Length: 169
Image (cartoon, rainbow, N blue to C red):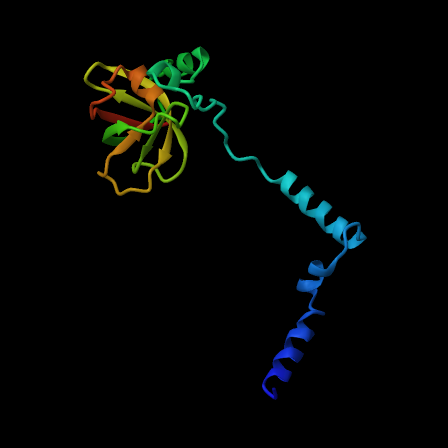
């Protein structure tokens, strides 16, 4: 019992701590409402993350056409790839088909450390597309994953492991 008294005293003294005051606040409390409003304003001021506007495939998708939800405009933009003067070669990679439920035109590769825009070329047929380059977190040489839409635009075999040349814009 003697050991319990100091512990209880310590716990009760913590109740007056400013960090615990919110636990006991009542709804409609002006201080709580002001804190919530301030937090909401800070969140609204944050720069929005890059969001891929391509919708995910429907849960009932079964065919390649159903999984590829890119628009004709997205495909036309990707196909307008041309070699830029400021473009730099990042290297080559062997790519496998990424998750068909992950929409968009992208390549997850260890050749980049952050999301950037770039271009990939499929040397077997000379096709080249503009693409979003996403970091895979792997080590260079570990291979890459490419979106279903990108594989289709490159006319690469969906079940193959194409070697791609990767460029950063």
